[in-house]
Length: 191
Image (cartoon, rainbow, N blue to C red; front, side, top):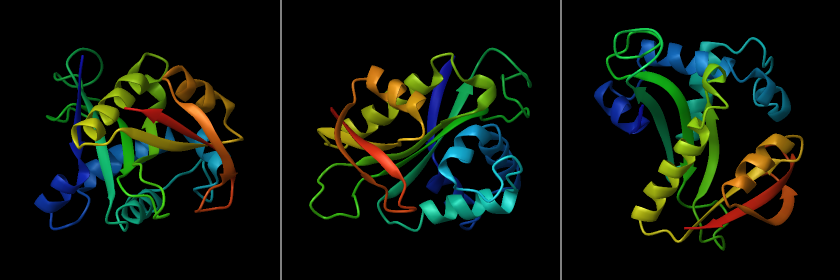
């Protein structure tokens, strides 16, 4: 199965800056399938009842930073749903993940890009998709001339720490995140 990344900005440009309704439905389904993660993160008022307007607000919030990029991960071929393997019969393939990167950290002394979010649909986890998505995000950053990448893992999410560590990320700091003052471990990987 081929994993294809598409910058959300290209879709928004084609739709006058608005999230198309079918895409918002797919994103809401993806976010809702990760309720346990969002229960840890506190990003949504009720992580077990995530609404379309909340997802739209979250995505739009990510895009307020000029260095942010939201990448949609779609799979083509094999599997479930429509003839192309998509859950909803989408001609672009099924949405299986999303990644948010930040090429410039808000702290001007931090020279590295950051992965702010990497999320795989709950129905498709534990099959290597997260690893594939992370590898493609890293390849994009490397191709853009970056020699390293960072991310923060919430201390309340030890499974994420194991996941990123197996991908070669190493802990370099422990602090609270900028958004919600949550304790986290900062990880770095040389590209």
